[in-house]
Length: 144
Image 1 (cartoon, rainbow, N blue to C red):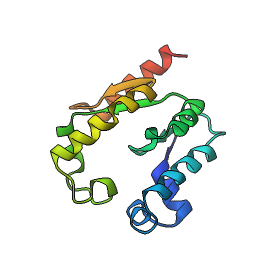
Image 2 (cartoon, helix red, strand yellow):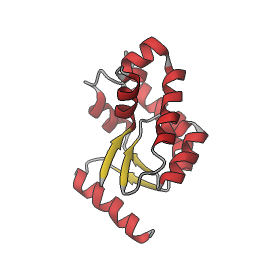
Image 3 (cartoon, one colour):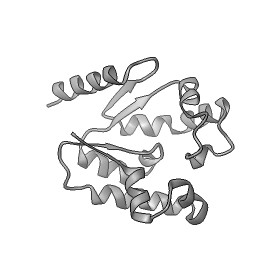
């Protein structure tokens, strides 16, 4: 299957990195670009669309994602997420806030909206990518 990362698509269309978009144009502009990006993906089939963490916060985006296919929420503990992002400098919402307390609070703040949007929830802590992929594939085969 083809894989499309919405953040990469936004960077290409705007001509700036995600960090630069946040710095120069603000979060509201970025969120608008997320929605435009989703609307432009409306004719795809057999494609995995990787969305940024804030995508599901907009109900209109959730509607678009549901129209495009199944929404898979990949979850991990705040500790796992911290280990994954602690050296990442490309996440504007974590800039100068990459610590466990902030990540925990952000996850808690978003949890109910993420879970309402998700068709499937898949835990990723201490798992190989291949095993996560197999679980998603099994869920897809059952849901056909």
